[in-house]
Image 1 (cartoon, rainbow, N blue to C red):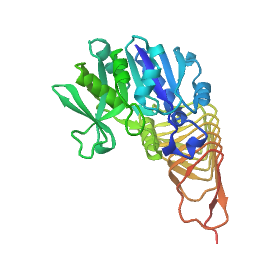
Image 2: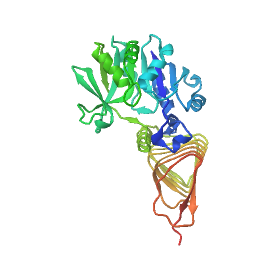
Image 3: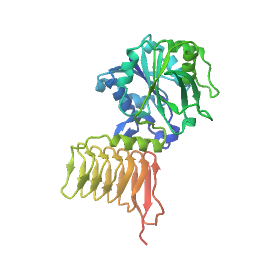
Image 4: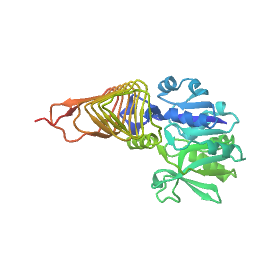
Length: 358
């Protein structure tokens, strides 16, 4: 099998972070989401991969490379505009040829990988398999209707959902999908929809089976989703310490200290991860926090945050919570009085936080 990763979106819901960084490269538990997708495919034995890219192509190519770090082969397919998932399949035909393949959205995080799914699909003579999961708000997703264990109908964001089984952005196809993407027409928003292509397969007698995923899954499209994904992933980490923790510091629970990191007179309450060459001094890092590499946290408290590389948080006397903070951000004390602290900061931002001093 081959793997097709879609990584061409603009990430508008994650702005301002995505003004300067592809959304698929924002880290969850100190690893870019796109890297986690590649990990998942390689773990399933799929090492011939292509990434569909758009405006952020150069950044993604520089970060991912040719795949050698995964012992895989990665090529790139440029999509001129966000013309739909089925359009991405259509322009990838030269790469996919007549092989079965997995299509995986590059901003998804899924628990447990896809090894059983790949084994199931490759061992059967099915034309397509779609990963579904039960959700509480099916009206916000494409949903599937099942009969006798097969998909019989797909509905995109229905007002009155016929089921609670949502499409999670992982699909498996054989070459008949190309017949479908050539047959369908653009939707009202000008895109070739993958739901229409799958519906074509169903209506024309091809076998389309569901795989109902029972673990967690998150589409990391919004800040809240990123923080949720980070929370779930750090909970699964095994604690380790590859840095330096002084005798006045305390680590509680699942804590990862990466190479070169220093913890001085501080408390780290896991699950949490402190990235390479970051320094935590006289501070508290609370649960569900990921601090990326070369950061500095001094005389401050953070909890349930994702803090990207080269950030400084200095002498903040209120705890920072539920925040996604971009690269090269500086947050420091300001002489005026604060009311609240909650941030979504773009790269190279500099914020002066008001103090309580009178």
